[in-house]
Amino acid sequence: METLEHTVKVLSVEKLTHDVLQIVMEKPDDYTFIPGQATELSINSQYWREEKRAFTFTGLPEEPYLEMIIKTYPALKGVTNELLKLQPGNELIIREPWGAISYNGHGVFIAGGAGITPFISIFRHLASINRINGNRLIFANKTKSDIILENKLKDLLGNNCINILSHEKVAGYHYGFITKPFLKDQIEAFDQKYYVCGPPPMMTAVTQSLSDLGVANDSVILEL
Image 1 (cartoon, rainbow, N blue to C red):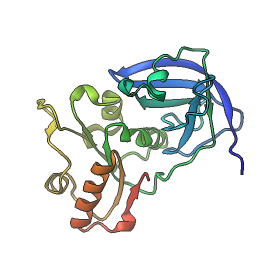
Image 2: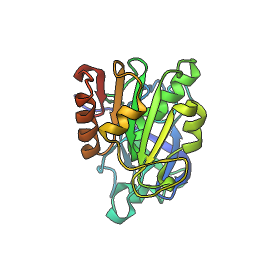
Image 3: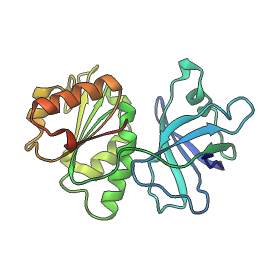
């Protein structure tokens, strides 16, 4: 089956951190997604049209535009480096939405770096229907300046937003990695859902720690 493509114009581009962009684009008629889903995106230009990369929607399905938050890697000279050059009016190509992570009950969200992006739309959706209480976020980054939407996440989750930094010691932030002892210290009950998204080595380590702590495999929801 041929994948449907939609050409959309860029409405705005904003730098959220030193290497993270927020891109707002047109929304095709009748296009919808479930919070947590992604799509394949490419730049509508001669040299980049076939260079497809998966990025997550970070807005809400009911909004009249589409939003993505994308970590860029300028040194790689690839798609994300080209996205740094985007201007309003430029065109992108998006395909149909897909993704393994969707909300399936309250629990603990564990994210590493740009792995937060599927959770942003989920948290915004839960807040919009007054169901965000009871959910907790553990968010791992290298430094404080790497934290995406730090203030927004704190507004949404309050004290249930836990930041841990691996490369920088900052007062009020945990230091180190998401280890089994750290999870045991931060989570009161392990009979709930766990949503995990981040770099593959981090996901492997976290899921193993959760298993060691008695979490059932079917309670762990991963972005594969």
